[in-house]
Length: 129
Image (cartoon, rainbow, N blue to C red):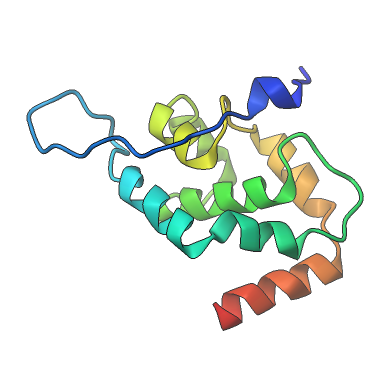
């Protein structure tokens, strides 16, 4: 099923207030801190520049997919199909700015569409920070 951009993306304007109390938290609640780190690093914009030369603009976008992979690794997962374990988690969706996460086939197809220039720019970002 194909989704529109409006059905996929959402905006987050501020971080929730952190209070340490007994409450019903998801397993990935610590991502709130990672979200702030990503904002301070300007990571999404820096990733956007790595793929700015590509004319094809998939619904999820290359920067979002790479950020999804970063979060995937931070959560401790290694295999792409493990996205299913956190696909419905609201905090994972929030940190990525999405209403729904891409499925494995979407991530695979989109990353296969990235060219050598994108890879070179991404390597430069990772190397130079």
